[in-house]
Image 1 (cartoon, one colour):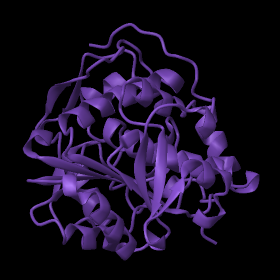
Image 2 (cartoon, one colour; image 1 turned 90 degrees about the vertical axis):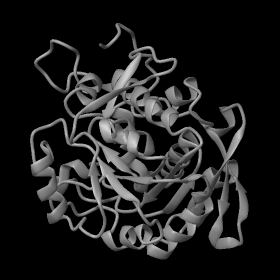
Image 3 (cartoon, helix red, strand yellow; image 1 turned 135 degrees about the vertical axis):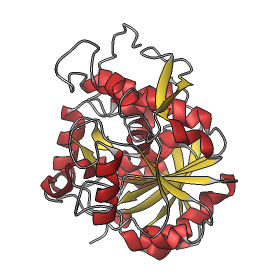
Length: 332
């Protein structure tokens, strides 16, 4: 059951780095947008992954043009014996709404080289939301309990409702059960409009769901964001996604959920006005920045970080320098 709560209206307010407080977390970075680049940055955060590993990947609607390339993921999965891609069915009607439909879409999109576990195929299980104001618990796909560790492999991009889709969205929506969890996030109970939860309230609900996942895998979860083919549309829009106008950047990875999403957002905001305008408009119009401030309020990580550039002999770059001049990180 969803609590009665009110959202804090801060989702269109970008907080400059110098105004942030607290500790700083390491965020690894590579410009190398390739299978090798993904493998190299994965090695920097892989030590926390033990036992049976789930790889939370948005596998997309049929023939989506902007997904993380299959061959990159295939080469990564070859380094993880016994691992499986994990997904859940979609809340909205379409080609992933049922397990049968979802399996067909996985075939179309070529996710056939390793096991894919649809976590809510056999239903849901409730997990606690510690400190949540909207929820005491969130319904996640039941099969999540079968995994010891989670690698959150995210295509960083825009999102129709969330403003942007980073690691927080990937697990907050992507691990929630389609029949019980996702409706709690998207819809006020008793409403006919399945998308009536929007803006700051939606960001907070999604983040509380994400917290349930992160807390469950505490110490055994890592995050990789691939900043490539960044449409303002999510991969759930498939072939109907808006054209890509934001430049490619690279790949960020961290054991800190907030830090890795914050670093990606900072790199967007540090671009030229021409390059960032579409993505910033999408983020701010949906109040997507509330994802970041609410993660901090819930103690889900640090919004201060130090970039470790693995292409440059692990050169450490302060975030102040990185956001002052993003040009070394933006690819032509």
